Amino acid sequence: MEFIGESVEQALEKARQYYNTDNLEYEVVSEKRGLLRNEVIVKAWVVSPESVGVQIMESILRALGKTGSVHAEQVEDELHISVDGDDLGILIGKHGSFLDTLESFVRYLIRARFPEISHVDVDVMSYKQKRIRQLEEMVQDSVQRAKRIKKPLTLPPMLRWERREVHRIVGEKYPAFESKSTGFDPNRRVQIFLKTSENAGESEREKDEQE
Image 1: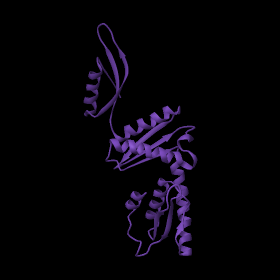
Image 2: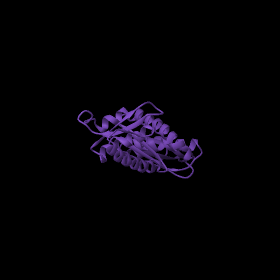
Image 3: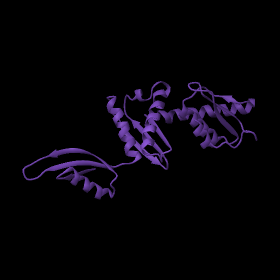
Image 4: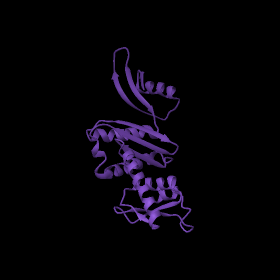
């Protein structure tokens, strides 16, 4: 939102009164100086994980010469950022490899400023949503096969966020099964197997932290 004053400080004071907080960031939109009166227009906004997430992604888009819309939403202690537009495949990379790196970079910047945010998720052109549907089908097939052969089933190598999603899917949809990650990147994989008294009890949160 924009605020007008005879100086930057006067415009910011109006912004502070409007938002009822001093925790603001701003940019000067225009500045006119006259003989009788100066006019400064300032765009100000409340600093939050959402606003900083949007700024980071918009800066990355500008640096790459790309255009797109960025939306950020905080749900409890998690921040979800989505980017939509045309020709943004460079932000995804081969099999989502660059998106995984991008998410780690954005997560580091957000958590450095807002340590209360435990997780940051970045999706570009709904790539992750489509991939999650594929993972759900993969897990369903793997569970059925593991049940039939009564042996652990090992999935192909996956990125960290993909492994986290597999753990979530197994935990939420297949309570009789357990999952764990094995190996080392870039060949780290997820194993799915029937629960027993020896392996039961590992929480989904613990799995996510291990990832």
